[in-house]
Length: 416
Image 1 (cartoon, one colour):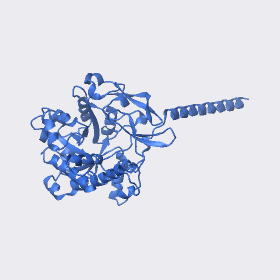
Image 2 (image 1 turned 120 degrees about the vertical axis):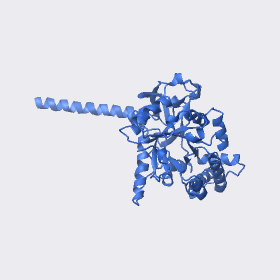
Image 3 (image 1 turned 90 degrees about the horizontal axis):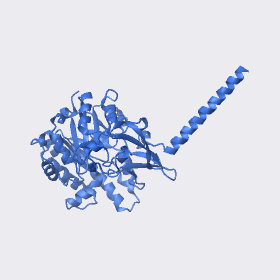
Image 4 (image 1 turned 45 degrees about the vertical axis):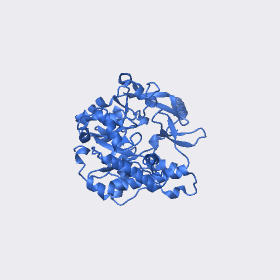
C-alpha cells in the first residue's frame, strides 16, 4: 500500500491515526516513544498511520514529548523542554509515574524506552514501515520552526503531515511570514504537508481578533471561517483542516445561566458548522477538491479516585505536565463528546484517536446500518492508585500464603 499522501485524490473510508502511538501504561509502554510507535506501525500493530507530538529544545531540535515540560514522563529537570539542550535530553530514561488521589507522585517505574530526538526516531520507524504516514503535532508557537525544519528534509515529503494551531498564528499570512523568517527551503509551500487545527474554545479569541462579537454561534463560525480561508489563500500545501468538536446539544445547557458555559457550547456548535463548511461547501470543494476534514477522539489522560473516593477525570497541562481535572459543570458534556469514539469521527475523513479500535469498529458497524452504544469511559486509562496496588499485592500475597498453608496441611494429613 502506498502512503496516505499519495492517495489524497481517492475517496477512502475513515482513516484512523493512533494518537501518540499505541501506548499502554499498564504494560509499561509510555506515549510518544519508540516502543509505542513501533507497536502501532510495526508487525504487531500493522497500522500505517500514527501521530507523534513534538517539543523543541533550546537549540531548536525536535524531540518526542507530548507536553512542553518533560516532568511527567522522564527524570529530566522540571522545566520547559525549550530550556534544555538536545544533548541534555537525548537518552534520558522514560518513566511512568504512579498516581495517588488524582495526582501524579514522585514514585515511578522505568520503561525500556529513552527520550528520543524526532529525526532518528522517524528514520528508524520508516525503515520498519515504508508505507507509514505520521502526523507531527507542532503546537503553540513552534510550528513555523518545524515547518522550516521539515522543508530541508525531502525524505519526509510524502510521509509526514504537520499539525499547527490558532494559538499563536492570527491568520495564514502570519503563519507563512513566521515560516519565511526561519530560512525554509524555497519550495516549502509545495513540499511540507500541513493541517491547521481549530479548537472550539479558540473561536472566541479569533472573533475578537477579527473584530467580531464573541458569543453567538454565527459570529464564532464567521471567525473560524475567516481563519480557515486565510490559510487556504496562502497557497501552502494544506492537505486537511482539523476541526475538534464534541457535537453537544444546546439543550444540555437548559437551566444554566453561566455565560461562559453557554459560550463554550456555542463555540462547539460553530465548530460543527465549520466542519460542514470544509467538507461540503461547493466553493471549497471546487477550489480544493482533495482537501480532507480531520478531527480527533480525545480521551481523558487518566481517571483516578479523588480524596472523597469518587472517580474523577483529568487532562494534562502542556506547560507543566501536571494533571488538570475535567470540569464537573455542563462543560463535562464537551469533554465527554471529545472522548466518545465514533462521535466527531462520523463527520470526518481522518481522525486522530485515543481509541482507534473503537473508532474503526463503530465506522464498520455504521456501514452495515447499525449504531452501537458507546460512551467516553475507557478502562485502560483508569488508574489503579499506588495504595490500591499495594493493598492488592498484599491481598494476593496473603491469599498465596493461605493456599500454601492449606496445601501443607493437606500434605501432612495424607502422610498421616
